[in-house]
Image 1 (cartoon, rainbow, N blue to C red):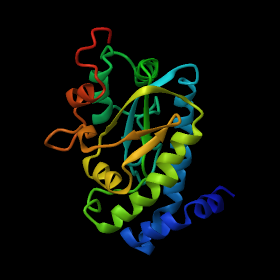
Image 2: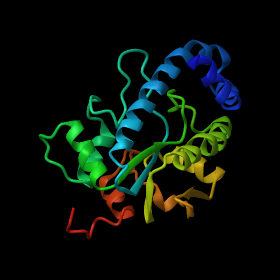
Image 3: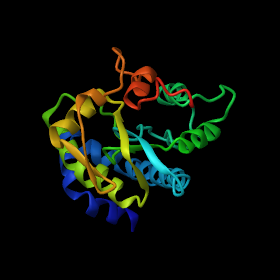
Amino acid sequence: MMSQAFEHRWRGELAVLEALFGKEKVKRDLPRVKEIHEYTESKWNEYADQLRDRVVRYLLIGEAPPWSPEGIPQFLLDPKSRVRTLMQALRKVFPTYEVQSCGDCLKTFAAHGFLLVDSIPFAMDYSTKRSSGRYDDLVRLTATSYLQQKIKSSALAWAPDIRIAFFVKRNARSILKAVEQLSIGGRWCPLSSQMIAVNDAGYPDADKLRDIYGLNDDKGI
């Protein structure tokens, strides 16, 4: 049932995904893509529950959950996921003790009003595809049908001065081609390339994130 609902909901987006990766690859990988989607959506909702009585102050826009061929999917908002580069950067943005578990770190992030939202619902390896016009086409669709829709349907409270950052440069460029602003909490929030928080190697940069979030002069964090 979930399979049919997934394909019906993302019919147009999946057609573009096939144009980007090829029909056979998408057909072969789709069961795993659905599995990762279902798992990471549940973990996103569990994390969002920690924000129900809080205000979202810091929004981070990503690309998609990491692709993996098998095993438990890796996802930043899953307390059981291993520490990856993004988690390492965020531990410096919202300082936590190094000995803390990922679960404790996520509680710290939530306490400060941090939220991650991806722009694509399909966990695929986009590393060699981001320069393609078809990748732009995919993001143009999912920026509205997934990213914007997820923000609108979350029923979370959003700070009027919410800070927004991106951590995948080429994905951010594609989003900026598609939309100039996002509707967040009943307000239109403009997007710009100044919100891209990566270093020269393309990895999430803690100092840039703190700058974008207005935290470098904040002695309370």
